Image 1 (cartoon, rainbow, N blue to C red):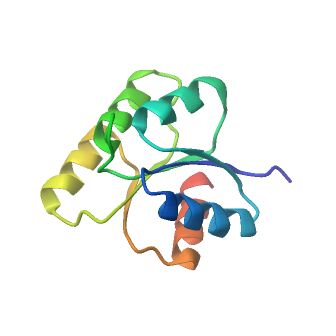
Image 2 (cartoon, helix red, strand yellow):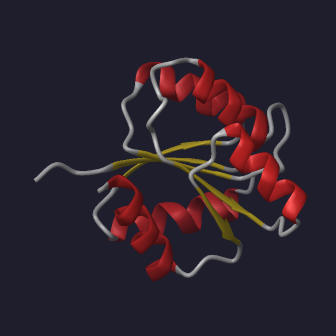
Length: 122
């Protein structure tokens, strides 16, 4: 059985720690970045099965990050879940238009997050 690799992108160290704890305990291998630019750097060198990204981050926000990921051509089918405090329909529309696969509002329920990951990668 292959271990699924998850890239989490968020500027909150607390959220990164929570995601790492939750996903590691569920058997995922976790890679992390603190903004979209770092996330792109990780994707240049690593294969991942799913990405979880925040929207509001310094340097490169989540919407721009998703647009760049989709523009590379290597990650057209990579599931990208947006994990954010944003709830506005306008932001959801922007996330979907950029190529986001799903939308999860913080704070996240660990069981639901794992369920969504398993759904989008299988």
